[in-house]
Image (cartoon, rainbow, N blue to C red; front, side, top):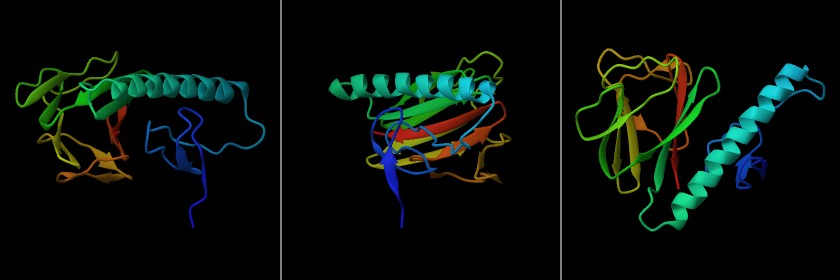
Length: 164
C-alpha cells in the first residue's frame, strides 16, 4: 500500500519518500533535527522545485506549450528545464540531429550529443549516446527505456523527465 501526501513544491499527490509525478520533486525524509546547512540546502531545493512547478503550470496553460519537460539538476544545485517535443530530441553541448537542445550548466561537461529522448504519443524513451554513461537506480543504462517520472544520473547531474 502506498501512502500519498501533498507535494511540498506543487501540491500534487505523491508517495511519501517518493518522486512527484507532476514536478519531479524528490521527497527526502529527514530526522526531526538536522544541521542548519542541511536545512538551508533543503530550503533552496524546495524553492527551486517551486519555480519549476510554476513554470510547468504556465506552460500547460498555453495551448502551444510543451506537455513533456526535461529537468536537469547540476551537482551544485542549478536547475534547468528543457522542452521535449514530439519526435527525436537530442541533448548535449552541440547536438546536431533531431530536435537539438543545447544544455549549458556551469561545471557540467557534456559530449556534443550526450543523450536522446524520443516522444511518441504517450511514450517517452531516453537513451544515452554511444560511449556515454547514464544510470538508473545505480545500474548503467544500456538501451532506451521508459523515461517518465524517473531520475537518471550522468556525471555531474541528474535528469528527470516529467510528462504533464
